[in-house]
Length: 172
Image (cartoon, rainbow, N blue to C red; front, side, top):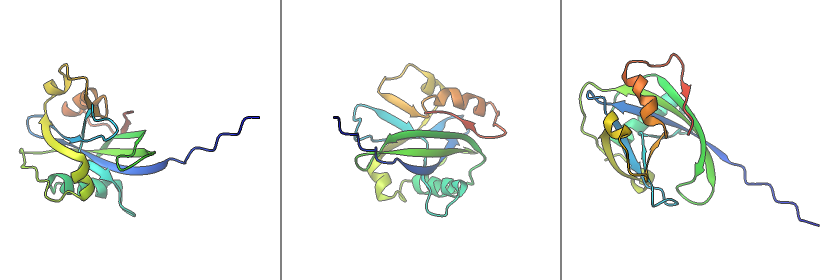
């Protein structure tokens, strides 16, 4: 008689706030994130990270923006939500990311500072750069992945001034 399979480990939820930072030339700020389990992939993500206990999504977006970029701007409305299961960066296992993306359009191109990065950010964030829509939509190296995966498609209406009345679920 076959042994019953043990119940899988419960997947931990991790609430996170992210900021879609747009400069005056309609370029989006993205960070290159190292994936220990996928060294063959270049994952480019918006600034952001997990909520601290008792913190709101909006407060986390503002704090993460300051920590990761040095910018002290007030993030605008939440325009996207995203829920997905992904591998932990700090060890084995998975977690469910519950993300909210906030909009921020800047009047000038700022100097980005990484001086306030936490140890975790310094471990996993490798580089940053401003991406134009042409660069996002150009035939890219298949190793390059954006998060969310449909970033260029999702970003176009926002750049045209079409902020949604309520956040849109954007998928992986």
